[in-house]
Length: 577
Image 1 (tube, rainbow, N blue to C red):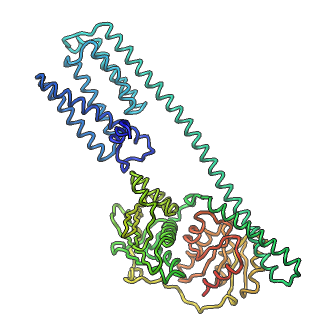
Image 2 (cartoon, rainbow, N blue to C red; image 1 turned 30 degrees about the vertical axis):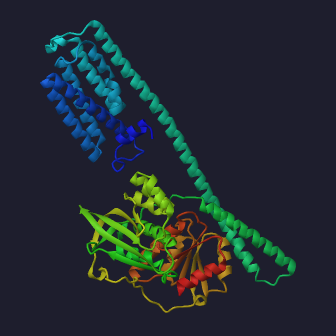
Image 3 (cartoon, rainbow, N blue to C red; image 1 turned 180 degrees about the vertical axis):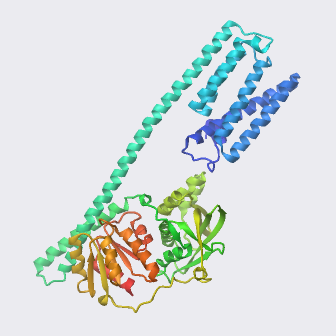
């Protein structure tokens, strides 16, 4: 690291106070440099004035030194750049004016004042800096051209007066020309950045659209090929079907690869704000992981007693966060019986708004060597947490938490893995006695019906594509008792209200009302009846976050096209039984 880099590091403010990408972050670095130079110069001349016996000048310099120190310390503490840069400007300007009035600066010495615009325009920005520089020029010019007006004991020569005006205006114009060039270049760069973002977004939308369009007919090929395979075929026909099936499987792999490198923004969905019970929301999310892995994963949920009220906000997003975090933590837990601790506590409350602390920790996390490297190389806390979130595939949770005004933070050591985040919610209604939290973890109680087998199941298929309807009906014809079809979400709600179904197969992209909205409305209806109908998403959406969005909306399982019919039947049987 060279001298300049060390100097920049010395003048760099804490990244906890500033966004490193903001304009004020770079201005704050310059501001700290100005403060450092000012303090050193004032200290030097203070010592010299004391030695030379200039008592008044010494006390003025000591006062300026003390005020500058206090100003910079307060700035480093609160990060209010606009306030403290203004205070610094006022102190320096008053000191320079006092030097002229007191006779400390005379003749050519006043020419150093022409550097004032360079100091102030960089510090305050073009608009404020120009205004302050103009005011200072007027005051200085009056002192230089009309010293008798203030009873000064000396006068400036005409050459000094002319040079003062010439140099000051020259520096003033130079700084404005420079700032205009910088602004123009930044505007051009911003245009290029926006253009690049637009192109990237267009590519992502194109990939998403193509993936969806390919998956639907590809799924039909897979299902039909499997059905034809059950027929009595001669050797030549069997060979042709096997070729089609092999080619179809290769296409499936290609489409899956497209989905893996794509990243659709989850945060474009509208907020689903409502009063919700936080404990029920978290427990329902945990239940998704207590099926096949129930023998290896134990969840210890602890919700503080001070959360004795509902929250008003979007429960879907908090579900998405927990789905993403828990799923990727489980992927990296050690073999054997593991425990994941979940702690939730109210840390502050003001004017009906509460700060809720969410903490997830485990001692059974496998060590990830790249985390140590990130901790050693990333000095910024925010950048370090972002890098760790990306490494551990917490991108979805991290983006949602940031969109809600929180920040995902990590406390990592060889002994434990812990992550925390704090979110603000409006305080909802107080919980009734019936809603009070049980001391022991228990699944939410639902109306229990007699278990039925898949072959006796009454199925509602929600699908707008006629070909897809026929394919699914053909696949399920011998496996279930009855399948009814709804062509869109609105029709599905009508049928759901007039008949009882054992399971619902839900498409996502449909006209009139899509599958996500339909599922949320069905779950709202079920709250009043204390029932629960399993819903499986059957969708061509298979990009990053689609599964989490479906499960967070209230669906019980998810299957993406193309799929094997046996996979669908297994999922249906699991949900029914």
